[in-house]
Image (cartoon, rainbow, N blue to C red; front, side, top):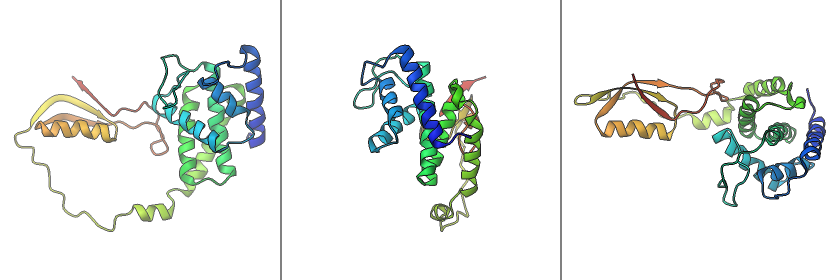
Amino acid sequence: MTSLQTLKNQLSYFLQSFTHATGVPSLQQSTLSRLCSLAAEEGFSSHSNKEIDFFSKKYDIALRLFSFYDNKGRKLGVETLNHAGLQLFAGLLYLRILLAIDQNASDIDQAKYINVCWKAFDNINLPDFLQTEPERLKYLQDKLFERLPAKNLQDKALSPYTVTNIKPVNWDGFKTLPIDVLFYEGPIARAYLETFYSLKCKSRRIHLIAERDLVSKKKGRTIYALIFQT
């Protein structure tokens, strides 16, 4: 298992190897140059944490990074980050996890970092120094699961009230459409079903689709609500 300092050294060597081959990125506001700056730092400062959080959220949503973003976080153009840049990004995500553990970050933050790191490890062709790290990431995730759910969080989430009587939906007068809905829990999906209901329509069937995350542990692309006809 790679230690924190060893991973820092490996990231430094990796950064030197591909900047030597391709040259130091000349465009200072490019995604690649920003990631190179993060990798060159000894630790994550407040600014560094904001930077890695920004890229982490972008990747978490789209499973890719664009080569340029403006100062409002919007992509500039359609060019995506190259392969070496994505490998560097995966290393930085993993480094953030080890730093979070070393600095006793909250379990919630650790869970968030592990979740997006899994997405990167699953979708990026990892460099040699990360090839064996998915095994350790699984170990770190399992150790985290042993502490979750935290009792203090669970107590806050428990409702003091018990729902004892839920009235069944009256479907009289509703039209059943010859479609199936693949449903991934979220506000967009619920909005689709609410629209159906407001039009006095319902789908033939609803299938719940899970994606790989810290809860389901299944791998898949996020589907908010996909409607198809058979």
